[in-house]
Image (tube, rainbow, N blue to C red; front, side, top):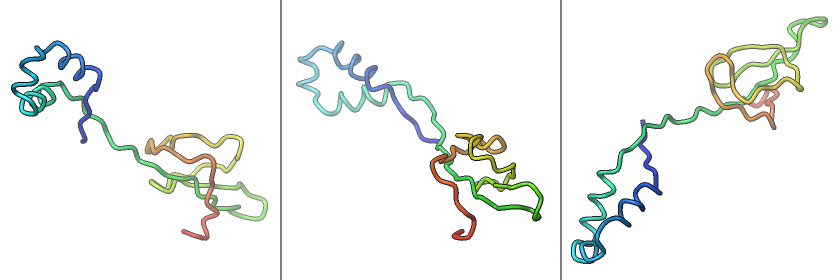
Length: 102
């Protein structure tokens, strides 16, 4: 997982450091302050799209699936979700693939 830090927290630590020390120690001290800041773990975001599969038979249900995990659900444009309920991938609800270009 990637690490991120709170920039405002780092700036606050630098502001509380004696300015003479900052000038004398320069980059080494700034590096130490940044390394000392507590980092939070962040997960990468999985992104996918809904792929329109079409009808399963002439009088059947219109289907779509998640491009990341393949989970299927009925295709209802008004009910497109921002996340796949199965794998949690963030979905682009502005576009739905027709499944022919995949």
